[in-house]
Image (cartoon, rainbow, N blue to C red; front, side, top):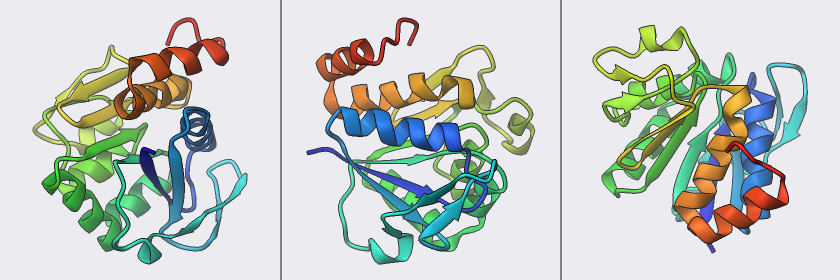
Length: 183
């Protein structure tokens, strides 16, 4: 079974986080929500989620992909968390898939794992220097790094994760089941 790690902190973007979790679980991907702070984490719009574990407690576990939801101050928290930054670098070193949406590509940039081509929430490209911001695509894939723009692109982003981890057939099955016509 494919395994996905979703690190979060206070201020996470709820639509992005829940979309990734829901769509990936529909595709039979094992999803682990790992907080960098407390087990109960409050989103940017005051919706709480109970994480499965703390990031510090997953050392040694093997994941196929890591996906960072955006939201503020979540994106800054992820960019400043030493353990998460080390985790991102390990994923890159091991040639594993990395994904981030909204403001979270900033955390990838801070870890030095963001590839040249990316997208993000408009305005955050100014914080990411020396890279090729693609503003007119909802999802950008550059080698093993997947990025997306924001809440309205979360379903497309989550479906791309399914396609990467489970293949085109599972992607089509889930896409059809959720009535996603334009993803």
